[in-house]
Amino acid sequence: MRDAVRRARAALAAALAGAALIAGLAGCTPGGEPLFGGKPRSPRDTIRITPEDRAKDVKPDTRIEVEVPDGRLERVRVVRVEDADQHEVTGRIAGDGLSWRPDGGPLRLAAKYTVDAVAVDGDGRRSARRTSFTTVVPEHRFIGYFKPENRSTVGTGMIVSFSFNRAVSHRAAVERAIKVTSQPPVEVSGHWFGSQRLDFRPRAYWKPGTRVSIDLRLRDVEAAPGVFGIQHKTVGFTVGRSQVSTVDAEAHTMVVRRDGAKPVRVPVSAGAPKTTTYNGKMVVTELYDVTRMDGRTVGFGGEYDIPDVPHAMRLTASGTFLHGNYWAPADTFGSVNTSHGCIGLRDVKGGSPDTPGGWFFDRTLVGDVVEVVNSRDRKVAPDNGLGGWNMDWDSWKAGSALQ
Image 1 (tube, helix red, strand yellow):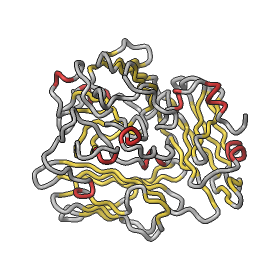
Image 2 (cartoon, rainbow, N blue to C red; image 1 turned 180 degrees about the vertical axis):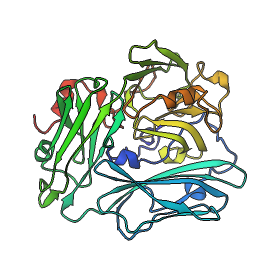
Image 3 (cartoon, rainbow, N blue to C red; image 1 turned 45 degrees about the vertical axis):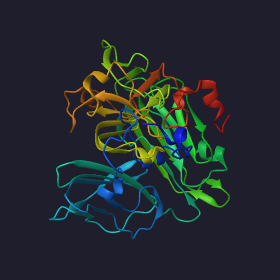
């Protein structure tokens, strides 16, 4: 899958901490021909979700609705995130299987909601859809949506990323009000990408076992004239084992290095000559056991629309994934690059833990690093996903408002 910047020159998904989670569907498929005959179906034709994907300032009295025109909903999961704390929204699928409704009352202010739904049509074909939206923040207030989740365990490449709902002109004041510390201690610096995104990282990858604390003291901090913060809390996460994988696009292989264990070599298929994969260090930001990949969401026409891609791991906000691939012949992997920019691992329809795709997915954490080398493409931008490791330390620190 090729990102929209390259084909349609659409803007990159804005900001990661909230927005990368809000990023839409994407995908890749071998060759340039449509995978299915005729016009590809839009995700909206299969699973309809209200509010719309990426909606902002949604009012509290808006009702979350998930519907399918036929077949049945297999599962629906709705999560509310407030200050990196996750809360599952309970609900139920109707007796006829065609709709899901929440049990509770109004939506919470200044929160982000994520809806994941999987449906099965009348012919037994599965499809998936994920949407996200944010609710209204009181006027003259600002909030920072951030990753990773509170109390989570992440990979050594995790970057703390804030996405602010309003433009920040007093950057030094806002950055000073956010303290990122660790045990064992390391130097951590912020870097601004525009006026609404602030990322934090150390000089090198975190050491396994590190405990990281994020101290938010944004309440009543003025981000812009007349705009004040509302957050005041401390959250944190733990760094798990080290897993860094190197994809050699020319050799069609991925070498997985975990802690001090012997490296494991896995055959892959990367981006085809006209739709190459980015070079550089990328960080896993999302994991889906199944997801839909529609070329129109990343700037293509109707080349592909795959409703049930297994074992998908997001690497960039613009649409690069490492995922299972059941539609390419087995001898594709390790021998030829065929995708629209993704990195494919052999898999089976429905996904299996016994395939390379399932094996890697089951051993991956959000925050793990995947580095691509020897691809005939440019290096991934530092603000495309958690791409900040592609900047040297001096350049990174120069982006802090406190320098």
